[in-house]
Length: 377
Ligand SMILES: Cc1ncc(COP(=O)(O)O)c(C=O)c1O
Image (cartoon, helix red, strand yellow):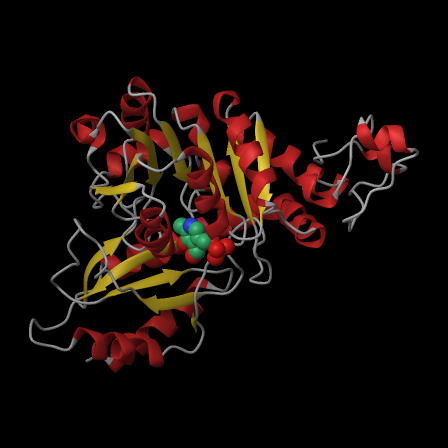
């Protein structure tokens, strides 16, 4: 049985204890100078955070994993670990919006040159490389429009240029895609979503291969950005049931996506597991499954106010909650703003609505969406 820790260390209890810690005591002054014990201070790990890291290492096939307080920190910390002033970084244009903000503000202020690239660029990313390109960041499927990337092709080019490849793999989780097996160096997970699964925890994990682990660990230690034991425990607990929850999210989301695709008032469904989706073939080649979040484009008149139509749809919903994040038990919906993007154009047919399909009954969810469609007639 895989538990992330050795139960015999804790009298046979199947789960590790929650060790809340800053101070760790040493037996004498000499041991403080040259520690022989495993734990020295709370920021450097506890038995609870270690149990989560070892479970995630196994899922990701990683040499090492760090825990950080949010999914956003799980993306920004590796950027700080691998980038220096004067470096050039290639970031996918469908990146999570708050990461774009970090790149355009803080990274730019630190003298890092940021360039956004089209998610379907594949091996042609070679044309964007410069002598100072040090990092390529992927997110696939991308935020809100779920664009797929050719991960092995991009990683191969990046490695020829000695750049580190980071990937936000929150959508698929390592259950449905293992980035390190496809050439990525650093796999990022907002554990806030499916691993936590209940809308009550913020946490992130960053898992590196052997080549990239040392710098990541050093940056983690230097910044003092670590996760709390209680949150790590809850995420470890969430991992135990993530597989079965994901199966339900997957089947319900696909059922809703197919139902939407058949409607005249839907222009397009943006779900990579649908054969109609651009680059579906790449998704099928690399991914073992799909999760619960996807978008659709509402078909409205060319002269309609997209925002007003989107709001009318959302305000009519009774089961789907209006709120940020995803990956939890409850279905959520929101109107997506794509205006920050530099390369990808927002769909012309209508507003984009993102759905997170939770664990509720699918027929109830369809009835709820019908209320939305009735409100935009
Ligand atoms: C793809 C993706 N990555 C990272 C994050 C950030 O996670 P957190 O909310 O834990 O900061 C989000 C949040 O929505 C996300 O959608």
